[in-house]
Amino acid sequence: MASHEEARQALRDARGQFTQKRLAEKLDVTAKTIARWENGQSSCPAMVLPALREILRGERQGALPLNTFSFIDLFAGIGGIRLGFESVGGKCVFTSEWNDWSKKTYIANFGNTHAYVGDITVLPAEDVPDHDVLLAGFPCQPFSIAGVSKKNALGRPHGFECTTQGTLFFDVARIIAKKRPKAFLLENVKNLLSHDKGNTFRTIVKTLKEELGYDVQWKVVDGGHFTPQHRERIIIVGFRDKTDFSWENMHLPTVKPTLDSILHPQNGSEITEEPYTIGAKAMVNSKYVLSDKLWNYLQAYAAKHRAAGNGFGFGLVKGSDRARTLSARYYKDGSEILINRGKNKNPRRLTPRECARLMGFHDEFVIPVSDTQAYKQFGNSVVVPVITEVARIMLPHILGINHPAETERFQESQLSVG
Image (tube, rainbow, N blue to C red; front, side, top):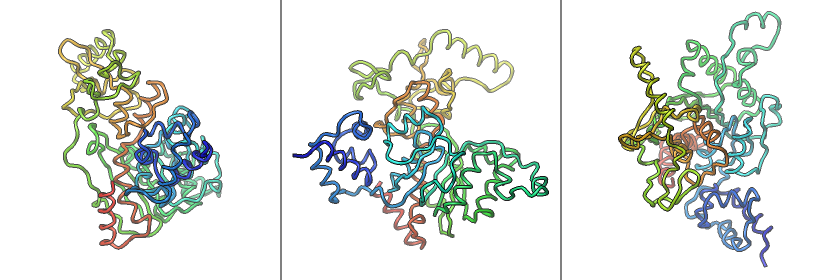
């Protein structure tokens, strides 16, 4: 008779091949269920063992295996970049994220199956596992370029060790220097381009190209092609060897979605998810409606700034609109994205589930933290479909497919699979 332990081992083996979402689809359960089995929150039932064995025998039905290439996830947040690269067959072998609340969300969704380090700044680069691709949504800290000549005169480290030490980018650079991955992807705010009159970005590019020897390209991409918010972020990619990688291969939808696509319908067509929605019709919980005091304050504050000729104000939107950029401060008052509830009714905030959708996370993504932490996490995250599309066009070059015609055929095949 099959045992729970055999089922757990088969589950671990299957997760070496498939994402939680794809495996859940194969087993006709939710990704939350897979996460609970992995985390030990509930036992993996022995009765799923035959199905897991069948999956492991190769009945994949077009799913991409999770062993095509390996990657590490630095400054990982809640795993948005990881999701994009898992979707094209990557396997995460190492994660670093210092925030304990983000780690809680990350572990709830991905399990704890490999090394997870909190503070990457104190970890020797040689302790990082070998990997094909380095991923990092590194925070932008000021780069202190002044004093380089003085350091040189004193015989202190030069190159990227001099110009970037003291910034979190330095930790990305030292790991690349030591482990020499085939490729990397770095993500940051658009303003990285103009920070310190462009000096910060020039230092980053010089480090990656001249000091580390990578073929580097970058592009500002608006997540609004995929989700109903204006969200521009810079994506920097690099390859250890010269490739034919081109941003022109990106497929950006021309018809941009509206907020209707992510808002709770409140008509019973959606399963209730407390505390975000309640009752048989899955109505939005009234706790997300702004109080009279807060709504009056925001209106008065906006009026004051309009009178002074400033453009500051709240963002009141309806389902047919598109939103401003969701920020990590959304938990404070929700002012950048307020949902219009009709005449003479106070607007409401987005629920954390709606924020997840706004960032391109699927509904099976587990949100195990408070609303305050969830708003911070999604406001700091990436638009997952953007990363998925960049991963798709990077994939052939990661795998060594470098002939233009062959690359194009491969990328088109990945579109059909996705």
